Length: 76
Image 1: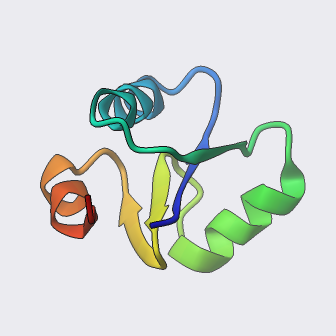
Image 2: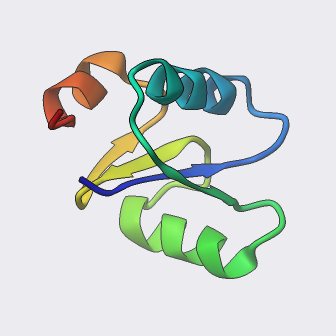
């Protein structure tokens, strides 16, 4: 399973999402879109959104911290 999280350092829901994955012991790649403009463009291309977090679970795009959607797409 591949999990990517597009974040910014000041985003509360980004921190909540990362902690949720850590608690479930799910590895993820984090991209700080405030610093990495290439990943920011990638995030917008994938989601159509400029807000964070954007979570990509095996190509399934979840906008915001949507626990139900995350749980439905996590394969443990």
